[in-house]
Image (cartoon, rainbow, N blue to C red; front, side, top):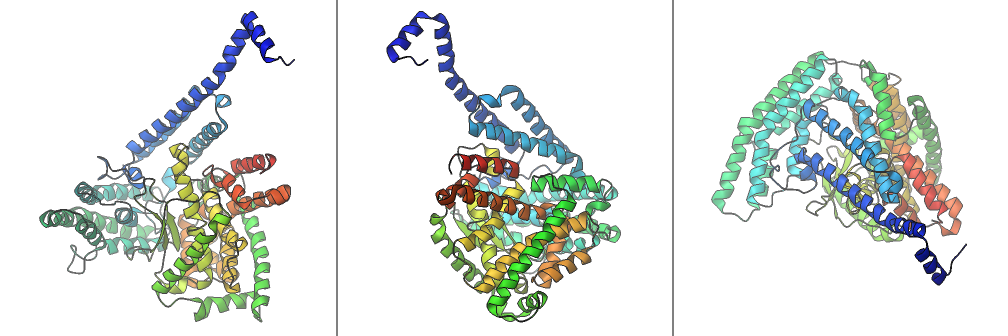
Length: 602
């Protein structure tokens, strides 16, 4: 029964029950608003507690306070405390909040916080299986890179904090070396071939003044440059630089020498098998890593087969490009041609970087046609620093600081230009820069209404899936006009399909490093240095490389579904908003959101 307004007023006045129901109905929105506000305050409090224990995390966010000169506590006790803090927060959230009473966005935050804590619980039993030092992850290069790229110096106090961090590098390194030694006694060491990379990085850091009579070392040069830019008196600058020199010689150098001694000790006894299957709980550990990185329940064998299927598909697409350019011969002969012909390589770093700049500017001009939400933070492109370029990956991205003090940065490794084919330049720039990681992660950082763990956290399959999706999106946007560049795009996708094969091959099927290198040599056009560096990465970073293709395939599947069901109503811009404005989510959640978006009419 529908009551007219006057009749409704008479009914309410005459009925105490109706008054009670009305008050309850009127209080429901207020109760929901209070719950949502309380949940926001809860997430902010959890974030504040986590940041209080993470000085480096604060620096990444652009926060300069009394912890600006400190390093994170590297002890297992600190890691255990962080884990306990997260599990306690999960229990508190479940006790205090009813998801049914939250707004849809806050309900998603509740669900994602729960997912994050549960993921941490699955990973926690295996934390001692991680390598402390390897060529991809290790304080020997990460601490200097942090000081150079994250620790900005705007004031004298910032410079003093830089010196404090230099002084703290000794105790920090010693604690990590002790942990690495303890793990080695339990058989957790990277393969023998990893150690020369770590040793080379470590020796590079303590090369040059004030360690010897050479040109200024990497860290002294960085400190000097930052201090000299300050608007303070010359004697103050000299005192700060001298304090840095003292810290380098009395703290940094001895600690790095102890690191070198320990790495040389381990190198002599290190294993020669490459996969983590050799660890006592290796199979369970790898299964957990696959679940974590892909956010699926796919088995290693299933992932391996998905890789093989997509390798075959992409090979077929590559043969079409061979016909287009008039190449006569087999696909493997075409690979050899692209791998060895000088026309596909730059002669100078400057030429490579200038071409990246041109491609990204053209992409940026076209973004508004495909995106409703664009990043505010600028993007900069940098070559990987000399002290770590020999061991660092091919390319990577660093998110901007939320306060605007640091841009998003695309790092490209130009150590050997023969490892960086021009055919791949476009796809790599679109993946790491625009519309890939920079667009996605800057937009994520700028989603100010979301709780901090969603603005600053990550889900690898989502983030790397988006990066790989962006490579193909570039073709939809009209780029890759040169067929060889389009071949490079396919080569990059092929690379990620092959990763599914070789990652599971190494860590599940017990392939050797040499077997994996041979698989990439036979099935990709990439140069030898690129291939060996990639396999070396997958060996020490098990599971991570599987996230890219699994994530990309899901995003493409969802876009194809949206295009078919929405027909002419489909909009790239609205689809991309539906994907991006949640921040990173597991693939199951992404699918639910896109399905709901389609049902709502796009």
